[in-house]
Length: 279
Length: 311
Image (cartoon, rainbow over the protein chains, first blue to last red):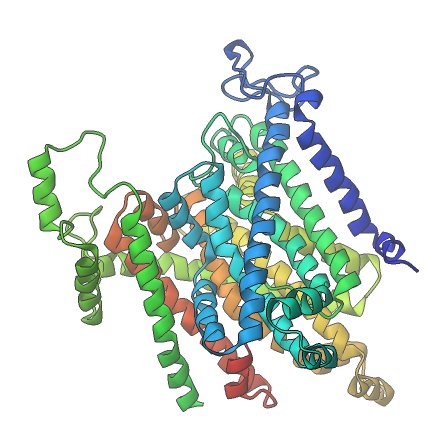
């Protein structure tokens, strides 16, 4: 049985992958699948409940909520995927270096990791967004700076484990050292756990972004992510529940899909792995 | 064990110090100041205020002054609430946060553990898959969405429970549900996987062969041996409760630590931010330490010294 066939047997993970592909395509093709400008205000049509022209209704400025959710997907997915990729790159480089060198490099790194672990990362992210400023880049930077530690610790521990295996010893005996040993020998062997942790990092980042947006440190209007939409919706929830329900449901299903996908991939690549909840 | 305790406490001091340095400079170098209001003060007045609070000094010196006061147990005075010391505010805010946190941990264990055991016992059935769906949903739902949904249903539609504020036991219900959902999910998943591991072992087969009733095997033999992962995760769960609590406190208008932290950051109330951050840091160090100690008490096979190194 090939890996893909095995993966397909994991029904939830398989459907999740299909859903995520679908929503990613919608986000990329946003201008062609929406029928109203996401930032076009139309006061005469404000706060409409869902109808045939505005599928998800309109917000307090008469903007089409369906368009805003689709454009919001761009922001949320971009933040999630880019944070995960960047923190993975940074974490892999630093973590593998620390695991390979050990000694003082490793000790310093573990102290920094400890600091981030005892302190809730979202609170550090709040301070960082205040520091680097709001907007896409600010949020990205704040989230990467708080999430690379999880990856670094994972890669470090994996590298330490692999180092005691005989293939590394053979490579060493043949004179392979330094980056070459890490990148062409050890890393290919730990791609599974890294991929799994990448998949789990994406929903975590999307959720952190939506937290930041919710407390008012997110993207500036008129840009929207699912977090900013939900936070706008929250304020109007009493009278117009549709404003929080639609972005909320899409956000929830997306996070659910990423988590199921991660579970499926873990069963495939890293059957004994445990998920790290400390972040 | 006592020497281990002190070793860990001492070992956490450099980490906490690093945290203080990092937060202090991050906060100070961030744009904006505590006295930037809607209307700017005349420059002379501003200079006087800065001088009063020592904000005109070089940053390193300010840090040194703050640190010296800290060593004497003085966290300074809040900028935002004039005339109130940070320790006083901490003391007031701690109550609601701790009550919320403790009730939530209790509820999470009370629901999470049986849920995990049930789904391990009925592995592969609809009960298992729906419990696990609930668990994945629990970690996929941002807390403000849970809160909104609960408020929509129970406060606005049904009018059973208050939507905000901190008055009487009714105001506990919605925040605690919001806060516990994620830990319940985490605990249920952990318990399930570790009970499944234990159920496959020899002594369970022996227990079956002895003819013990299933519930006795599950709760007396299997559960006892599968609680270690739950205890190890209690430290991280305490951290996630802290994270969860500031959103929950903001949404439900609960005057706890989390709400104070966010408003203090937004108002650049430097002493208050540092005070709360340090408090969180110390609290989480101890939470992790106690969960490690509990582990050692529960399972004599775990060696503390070694465990500390490998973690």
